[in-house]
Length: 491
Ligand code: CO
View 1 (spheres, rainbow, N blue to C red):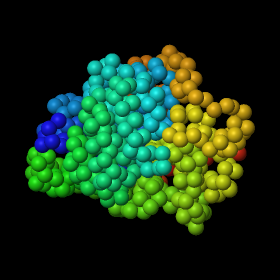
View 2: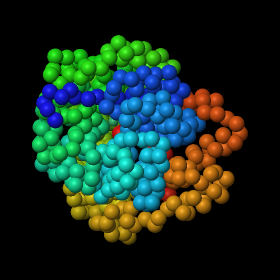
View 3: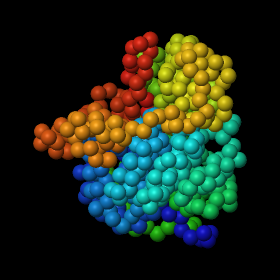
View 4: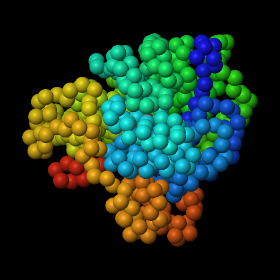
């Protein structure tokens, strides 16, 4: 790449934009009027699918996610579409058998998904391999992901090693995914420079404006030779979302690599999204619109901070807010310095609350124990030996070193029979969605049979403040009792 080749922008407004700022509740109908315009701008990619959008379509919007993808592809045929995929976990919190992962990737490719951004919360590349192979087999672009985080073991060298590994296992490009908005401009410069000189595939930077650094980090990455950066469109931008496209153009104005996108069209797009944002006020929150540098002090994503406030309030623990924040690095260190991204953000957050409420490690959540036992994958650093001993004693299980999915039986055949038995057409689309969201898939087919079309059901209003954040439910069993914990979903 020549140093003066313009940096390209990917646009996230139809996925991360509303996931970060409006609880992922934008409907396909609200997108329709501007999809063709978005396609005409010339973005390197349009992020239209994946992350929490699949869950949200099924759970709240009575939409079949594959129908959304078909519609968006039809209206935006020129720009490559991209999606976010949680590696072996697909769009859920735990691993699926290889055959389910393969079938889902193949079905998504068949419906026109072009670029699959595949990540693993632990950065264990073994959890990306099946998805990468399936995407490549379908002739599509497999983007490997480095989940960026800050810890004593996440050094520049460690990230370069990870980037090299991703290239070796077949990634067509590498994305630095800074889901918490922690990357500083100087780190962005150093990391991009190092990856560009060590890899021969394109490098992409995805950040969030949470701490206010993303636009500056994008500028620094541009200087260092980044191929593309993720931007969104106001008001589904900035704050806990990506920097907005027009702002990024202003920041890069006069830079030899500043791209030429039609600003008048971008202004018009912003006007449409202003209207949509106003209509979605039930799901937006001023807390998400703000820049919050506290996220840097605690190395905790901003959204997670506001979510904690709500969670602690509900449990009558508001006065323990600072204790819980201080407990997060303790939990992360004990669990091998895992990054905070779905689902580890939920796991670490919940365990930190339990440690504060019941005493350190007195009450362990099942997912935290599973992380310690290696079921989610290889942790960046070893799990604390005393904690592991305690978990092994409690569960009567030994830590595993194999890939979690290697312990699973193939799933498609059994799932297909289940789907068929419920009177739903057992296509790969339905079966793989059902694997992830069984009740929700049943519900949308019941609605369909009853003649209830998408959008006939108004999106359910937020029940409480914590619902307003891009929150996700997380089941936790304590003393045999099941609790629903709501923790921020971070992608
Ligand atoms: Co993101």
